[in-house]
Length: 219
Image (tube, rainbow, N blue to C red):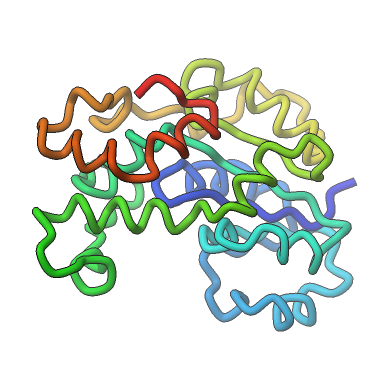
């Protein structure tokens, strides 16, 4: 039985891709509806709806409150190698769908004395992973499903089957699902692909710690 499903993850982790795959299986699907960012308003709007998919990246910053506000709902958390995500924010690929230039880096996340856009990109990425979110990611008792971007690329059909099982979605021909993986320039990025100055900035940030906690120890 399909119920309320919340899909979230850091930006550039594939949440739009997975939303497009799942949305056809729910009566109501909302992506980036910031008018429902307030959880109290969301609870009133979604009360009684048992075929709902809602995706917003900002939920990643407050997973405990989301879970307590919707105790019967399921949550899918998308993860992607933080180095790849960082590079995608720092130097967005114009072939990405949708393309986002992240002009807010300068307006909101930059600080005086920054070398370039990279420190702002680091701050924005880190903002999605407060300590309580990291605790939930590693909690086997939490009612969530960890979906890795890399698993979709390497094992699309089997990874999708696990997702469908978690969501209690019945699909007669699962291997016929469209939205196949797309190759982009940010896939496979490593720390060594950054300049030495940028590598120093990354090593001094929380990125190595986040990578380790999320299971991406090899930078």
